[in-house]
Length: 508
Image (cartoon, rainbow, N blue to C red; front, side, top):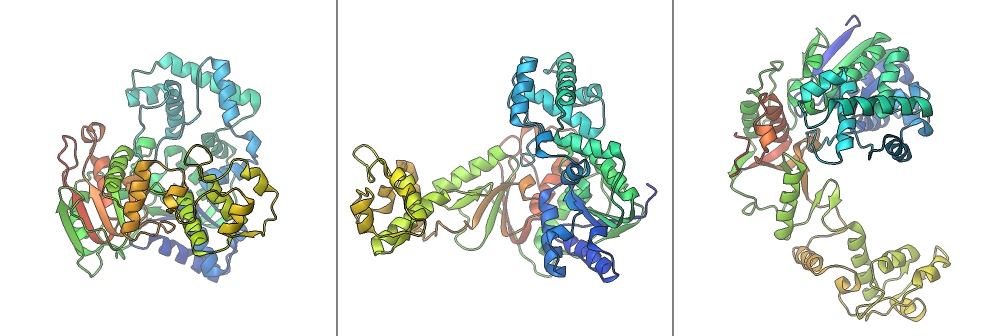
């Protein structure tokens, strides 16, 4: 690489984003215009955080930062594409008909899972292989042999690839991967004084080619990331491209997250990684705690914020089910264990019981979940149409709803009996309310995979050591060491390790 560059290694919690924003601050103080600064990443999360921080620090709007974008977004705008140019569900249906096959077009693998899984339709598995070959910049034959997925037929793979190319050419359609490859082929980029590439350890070879196009037209490029947290090789990432991207290397030396005890345990794991850049950083001054348990049942999670992490989505669902059995309130994949619309309906009904007036939107929320037939009916049928013609600023009491809008429920019945819920759901909600949980607030307990939690942190972290045969028997265990290193380094105070009794587990 012939362009001026610097590699910024950001170990867990070492203030990588802060450092990058300070680079932006320095540039602006020197008179560099905001539209001459680029900040790119493959994740929307990283770019959104940068836009928010830069906007807040320098009073800038997103419009004044046109090159703070994901690589896909930059490809989309750089190629002058519109929504109609993209492969949509209707296109996959037509392509399915043309090929005499059945495609969903879901070719993006599960980042939360951290694996390309063999589930789903066989034909979509072919699409995933085609897409991964493009991202890795290898031929279909190379990808086929590298994957060793010999239950897929190579001649069928080639047939689908050829048919897809013809369809996109005939109808002028592009995929998300085509956005990147098209940008690379065009070879032009905005003139920038500074280019920042965040989370660069997770770029696939094709994305690196796009970054090179951008960097060749930039006065200075900063690559930021951590090879020890490169956990997306399953998606085609080659961590060596990151480790060798610049001869000028700066390592951030102080973690503002990790307490000493968790730092020591995480270090014992990271040292198992063979292919890595050696780096040293200091933990926080506080000790923190590391505790080992056989299960979560003896954990006191009644206070504070908690994240419970597992290796796969399947294991995470098992953890969630266990929390539910314990009568604990949690969220998984951003969704609370009690639907927000249910929690709000309970709140609305209890407000009516107290004599509150509620708005039209609240009436609709309540009626949406209320039984309207059978012995348990609490609202007359046909009320939806009646409410649709009501003024939007109308207010209602229990008595007015009974008199004019078909409410049949006795004022004294429990909120849960007002709603169309199963018996188990009612028992679960009652258990939560006895614990004093406020169901309209975000749960304190979060269930996640290691991959989904990357970049996050929490006061209390629970790491489950259960793993899979595919993960444990992988001849290159660097990937697994990185995954669990990411999990262990999310903690700010108390780390809890849940031992596994299963055959396939990660040994700490």
